[in-house]
Image (cartoon, rainbow, N blue to C red; front, side, top):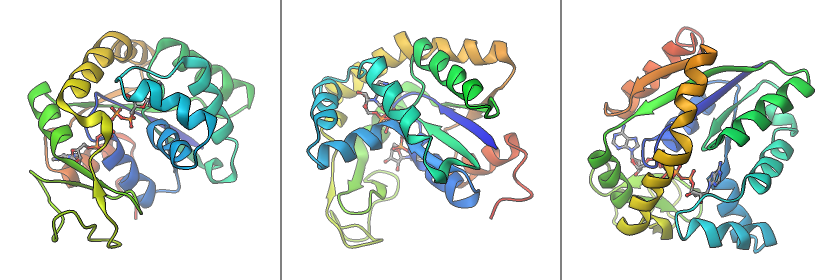
Length: 221
Ligand code: AP5
């Protein structure tokens, strides 16, 4: 079992990389933001609660996120291991995850891949992001737009811009990241499992660097 955390600021490419890594390995992709957006689409209480925080660029309360993620990793697709995307984001979340893995006699966090990207690049990536309403594929109007504007290449679905991707909210999400999530870099460095990955490079090069850090470059699909 291999548990991997992708750590990095909004727009660093966590979702993009987690999706590819999951497809190329037997690891499940568990993304807290995606789970909240799915809950919102389903109109659940959890979705409505999360939206009230997400729209402001604030973190959803720890107890809500922790409960959701610990339930999610009980599912059978997580048996071989998980790529955590967007979780943990606070010290309490990190501690809860570590305790849960010990409790369930699962192996601890094998690696934390920290995606380092400068702030000006992050804001441009966020401002240019478009996501498919139907299949969740991600595009970027600056870096790799869909062939037909507003239409997903993969499934023909409609592309939309996330409501929390406005410049003001994105800037606030970055401030929240610096204050509440960045301390986790040191937390995992001290545990000896932190790998820094230069996230400015082309997407495929970032993926290869991650596979090398995980020693999976020889076995990944
Ligand atoms: P979440 O959905 O997790 O958003 P985020 O962490 O802010 O990250 P993003 O999705 O913005 O960026 P990403 O790093 O995944 O980048 P992506 O691959 O899309 O969280 C949203 C909200 O939910 C939070 O604000 C909070 O309210 C709540 N929440 C979630 N988890 C929580 C938690 N644990 N605790 C509390 N609250 C929580 O890439 C971005 C763009 O760049 C895309 O267009 C992509 O195509 C492009 N791109 C990616 N890589 C490259 C590259 N190498 N070169 C050029 N372009 C690239």
